[in-house]
Length: 101
Image 1 (tube, helix red, strand yellow):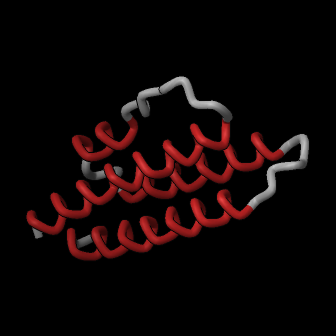
Image 2 (cartoon, helix red, strand yellow; image 1 turned 90 degrees about the horizontal axis):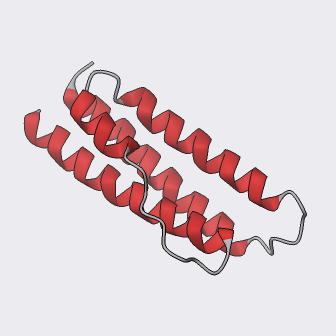
């Protein structure tokens, strides 16, 4: 698959990350299983991204690197930080793949 097509797919997944963040911010998080639900959503999103990078080991490793943890006041703040960090890494990946195309 051409690099441009992979970059376009990753751009779509980046937009999915923006939507994921908006939905998380809009959730009132009252359900007892909210954390597990949102962690599952984030893991699925990251899995889709990683699935597009199977032929890009350097970019895949960079994306899979752990997100540094701070003393976040709640799991939702940590989840939002993770989404933002993955989107940032995704931006760098898209830029790099687009340059190679």
